[in-house]
Length: 67
Length: 173
Image (cartoon, rainbow over the protein chains, first blue to last red):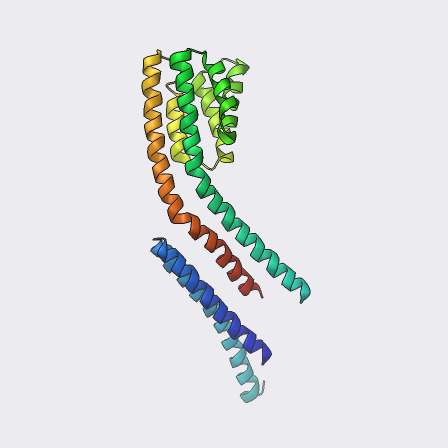
């Protein structure tokens, strides 16, 4: 349970930092770069979520499919 | 836990420092271009009014210039002093290309300086004066562009260094 909470905090932190980088880059007129940073941050978070989902499905499999 | 904390602090510190160094480079570029233009003006005086031979003129200009610029001119004078049959243009180009990474200046200023080097010391003083004036005008334009860039990117790189360091720390926790 504690691992889950820290992962959520980690994702939240990444979101905050990416938002700040986006704002800074946008203010300085590098909008294309800002969008790339956002996309890369999204992909990183997506990978973390996919890993967590994988764990969840493994759990479900071990519960219901009696491996 | 404690080691992790120290590592995170080190990463944050290093990222912030990198950002500040980048910002300092942006701040130093217009200053160094101005110093280079001032040194070239001094060189112009040496050539047009003093009629000093080019190696001596370079040496005296280098002695009075501020540091990164002074080293460049000193290197050019030393290359020229070797006397191994190369033209002034080749000596100048070699010295500038070698010393340029140590300065905060970029490629446009290098191109202006190299173009000046290909015309210096091969014609009479009026022609050299013309080329020196042209280089001064071009350097002024570059300085304005560099100032523009400084006001744009100095603060950005400062905060970006800290933010990227924080991102790396969060990703690695």
